[in-house]
Each structure stands twice: as C-alpha cells, then as structure tokens.
Amino acid sequence: MTVKPDASAPSLAILAADVLYKNAQQFISRGPSDMEGFVNYAVRNPGELIASATNLALAIELYIKGNMLRLNVPAPKTHNLAKLFSALPIEIRGQVIIMYERLTSKIVIGKASSVTLGVTRPESSPHTFERAAITNDLISVLNYSSDAFITWRYFFEFADQKPSKELTYEFEKLSAIAKSLRAQCEVSVDGVLQKP
Image (cartoon, rainbow, N blue to C red; front, side, top):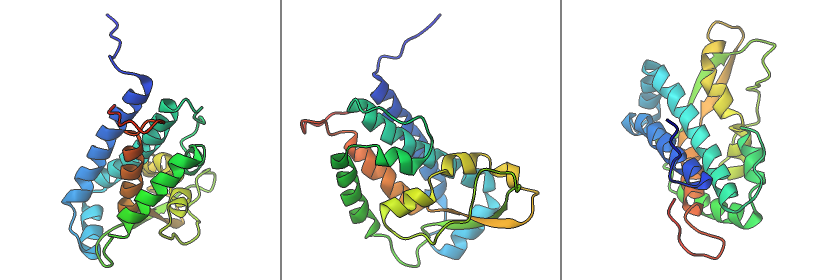
C-alpha cells in the first residue's frame, strides 16, 4: 500500500528540518557550558557529536530548500550550504542575516559555542579542512561549514589516516543560522504568516 503524505513539498522539507534540528540540539543542550567541559563531553560522546553536526547541517539545507520551494525558486542540487544560501532571494537572505546577527550578538565569550576535533583524511579525499579562520558573519560560517553534511557524516572514514587535520563544529553559529532560516519559513511572499 502506498501512502501519500498530506503535506506540500515545502512543508515536508521544513518539517523534516525541524526534526533534524531538534535532534542536533539534544547533544548540544546536554553539554557543559564551559569550553573545556564541552570538549571533554564531545570526546566522550563522538557518535552523538557526529550525528548532531550532520543533523544540523542537513536541517539548514532543508530550511533553505523549503524556503526556495515555498517561493518557487529552483534549488541547486547540492549539499553546499553557501551555494544554497546564495540562491535564496536577496530579501530572504537579508532577513536571515539580520536575525542571525541579533542571535549571535548574544553568544557569551568563554561559553562553549564550538568544538574542534583533530581528524585525518586520505590525500585522495575531495574534502578539505584547510580553511581560513572563521569569523562571526553568516557568510563566513556558511563558507567554512559548506560541506559539513558530507564531512561529518563520513567522519569515520578519516579515523586511521595521517596526517591529522582540524574540523570545527560551530554549533552556536549554525544553530543561529537554522533558527533564522526557520523564521523565514513562516513568512509568505505577501507577509502573511504561514505554518508548515
């Protein structure tokens, strides 16, 4: 028996993103608030860390694609978060950036907001961890984390390789991006509030 969901494509993308976001937040919310404590927590719970990073990256991707579907904008067939975000209409990008800046202005210095782990990758890997220093602006975070869904979900492939590289999970900034994108999912083109 085939069952067709009683929801539109944008609604399904947004609803799936909501669940992925919630799952990612479970790991984040259970961690200690200090940096050293959170790093130790992440090292003791590597499977949860990897699942959280993977889920949050995919949630962001689906929030972007849900917005695009809702607005009848063709979504690029990619997981690259920076490319997807740049394909959103400029008005939506502007609103997301404004909310993101408001949310990240509340990040407390010294409180855990990211975790960096040493990982390794084979020389033949298409994924690179050699990136510029991350800044707080949304575009830099998306550029740095553009392949997070692919990189984190295949984290296990790098376990026994040398040399080691660093991989950073910017969970507070990525969470702020997800929240900002989610807020736009409820506003239609004509300004009427819509729930998925």
